[in-house]
Image (cartoon, rainbow, N blue to C red; front, side, top):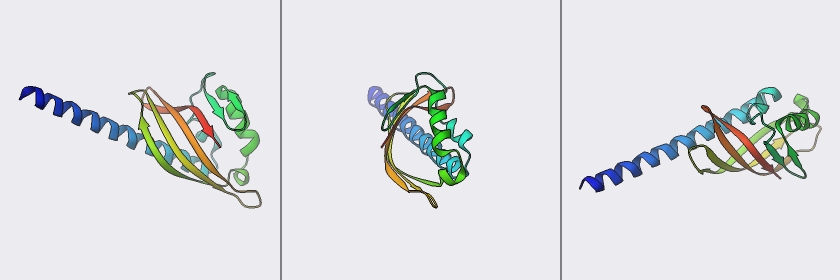
Length: 139
């Protein structure tokens, strides 16, 4: 009986932990969307881990936070270029207590510039108490 109770408690604990991680990452994604929509590119960029190992993959592979930041400033350096961003989160999958995957769709609407839409896969790492993007594959 004690073993059954211990197994139940372990399963319940893991389920609660996974739900907490999922909620944390949905909150992070909402924050990313909000900072973008305020035109706050600097705050948006803090969602990426400031590391030479951080990667952005789209039509090319960009290595390192400084290069990712430079790309965003060049491509989206004004409120008009940033437009309005909307995420549709398809899946949040906890890989371990330090890593999680977020899969989703995005829609970017802009005035006098082409709109964009597509899909993304984000690999997050827990850094201290914060989740940071370490790999962003957007197409």
